[in-house]
Length: 87
Image (cartoon, rainbow, N blue to C red; front, top):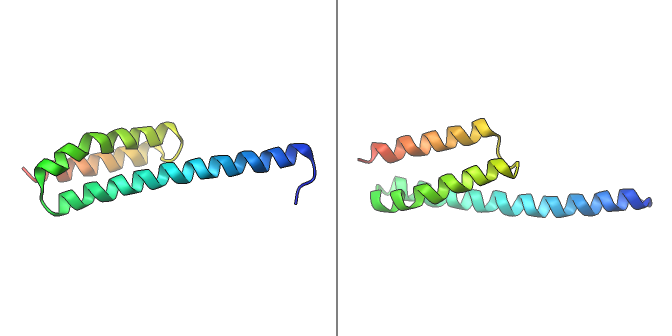
């Protein structure tokens, strides 16, 4: 265990960030699962209503450093393609 003041502070900061990141990542994965379920069930109205909040959450994840911007772009592109395929 660390004994320096600065090392103790770094441990505390890391724990705080880890909890925050875990919470954001969990929210993102739950939203993606919800969207995936709507797309798999071919429920177009549900999928369309979930699309905008899902994209917003993906963009939010980029700003928080949870996702890389190219990964987020790939997620959004694939979701949009699957949504358009329903019509």
